[in-house]
Length: 385
Ligand SMILES: Cc1cc2nc3c(=O)[nH]c(=O)nc-3n(C[C@H](O)[C@H](O)[C@H](O)COP(=O)(O)OP(=O)(O)OC[C@H]3O[C@@H](n4cnc5c(N)ncnc54)[C@H](O)[C@@H]3O)c2cc1C
Image (cartoon, rainbow, N blue to C red; front, top):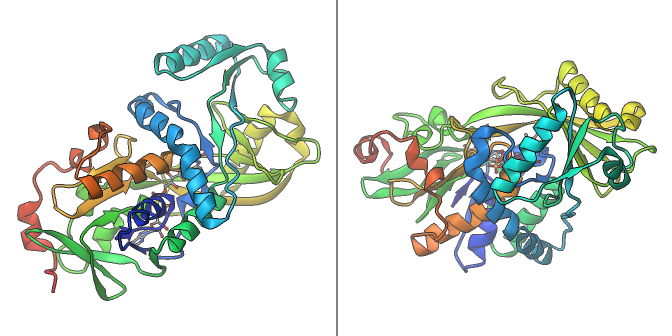
């Protein structure tokens, strides 16, 4: 059973259902309309901060799995998810621009990722919309994009076609269990039993504890996620046909197949508030225009915000807990669209084989759980009946 029907939960459900397992997916609201709906859709295996370096092997593995993952979803659902490999240009400004570009290129190469120095003229011939006043550019050829909304619609549809039962409006408020393990969940006043429960509720995981009546089970011991708001704009301009992802320290622009240009984003700790702000919209628009000046007159056709599932160490939480039957797949922060295929594979391996060949210890849910939870479990989980 999957708790949460964002891209992470639905990708796991999609994979599990291919193994002839009976799979249920419960979502508090309409599946697929939280962080996964809000994303830009960049598939960028490079580290976006120093803390993200341990993520690179996992990101590269997921990137490798992406073409097959997309093919399976498109074949099953009949929905195109606009997977493309345009590459990205990373733009640097300021006096130390060349130095920072060289640092990025060296770091990528050390991590086994392709990155090349590019003159401004060569960069403009690749992407005519690029600001000619850019100081330095790095070319990152191994970057892809996908339309995250099409992807989540396709994954949910494919999962359903494979037999997954999807229950919208089923907020999980407690786990069921005994000392021998987790045996199901309490959702919408119903006890629903399952051999395996996978918590994939994104930034809302820790909130499952708060919703629990009586003694809380303690999901936040394994999945202490918090929301990190990201605001976004969709732009349209007859003057700009963007080919590649353009990115700077201040923001990014991403081409969509329908001609829209997606511009992002902010990183804000404001709790579970999903509204955009005037300041956020202005900041994103200015960053987009700095990358591609012809966007100055662009029409803003949509604005929205989403809540990234952040974690204390900015790394995802993927794997079994020390409670038999309970697994976690969350905390994908800024990379959940990229990491969906590998997360689905790891969780399937653990459920089906009891192990995985990929060394994912860094991402274990047990890294946050200081003490064994079994004694707590016997006291606090409502008994299955
Ligand atoms: C602005 C923005 C831009 C981004 N851009 C990118 C990008 O370019 N590339 C990339 O790789 N990643 C990107 N991300 C990150 C990515 O979107 C997330 O990491 C990913 O979507 C997380 O997926 P999820 O399924 O874990 O969470 P979500 O999509 O948030 O899904 C969680 C689901 O759980 C459900 N739920 C919550 N509580 C309960 C409960 N108690 N019971 C049952 N269900 C529950 C919710 O209703 C929701 O449907 C971006 C995120 C944002 C916000």
